[in-house]
Amino acid sequence: MRSFRFRLDRVLEWYRNQFDLEQARLAMTMTALHNAQQDVARFHAECLAVERDVIGRSEIQARDFPALGLFRLRAKQTELELNQELHKRESAVRDQMQRTQDAQRRLRLLEKLRDRRQAEHRYLEEKELEDLAAEAFLAKWDRPSGLAGTSRRPSPIPPMAPSSHDGSRP
Image (cartoon, rainbow, N blue to C red; front, top):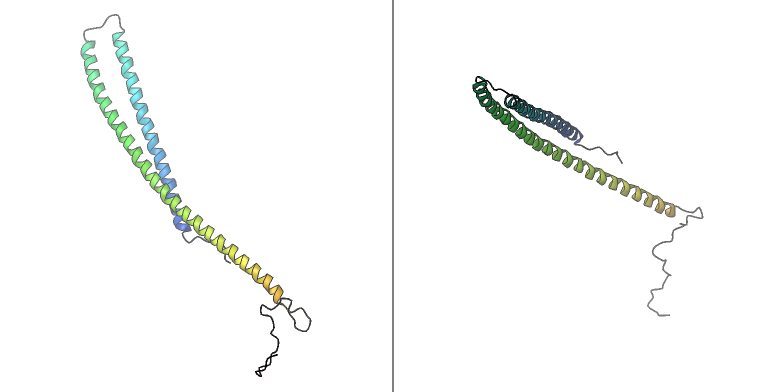
């Protein structure tokens, strides 16, 4: 019997490459999300540091109040932009996770199909070997023994005694 060859090996390899590509894209989107989270955290830390610096002074100059108000307005705008970027990155991660899961499902489906076909091939190969062994075993019994053409294997039908058909009974 021929060795096993899965006809869809090239498709399986393509699905495997697609899955690897989607995983790499997922890693990139997760890195971008992590960077956006760090930007938000860094921004909050900077804002807190400025607020503490201004409030912690023993004397606050009058000109510092309008600057602090403008800083707070700009900080709100920057925080809004950073949060929008963060939500955009989170959405990209969710979408990429879905694409990665879909690619993984397609790959696993084809791998299961290959495994089934391989199991079927193995079953047929074992059955062929069993049939071959059975034929070899039976062939051993069908060979003449060398004694005037008699067979070692008894005939399944016993020979019948000659009978006379002349109509008389014994």
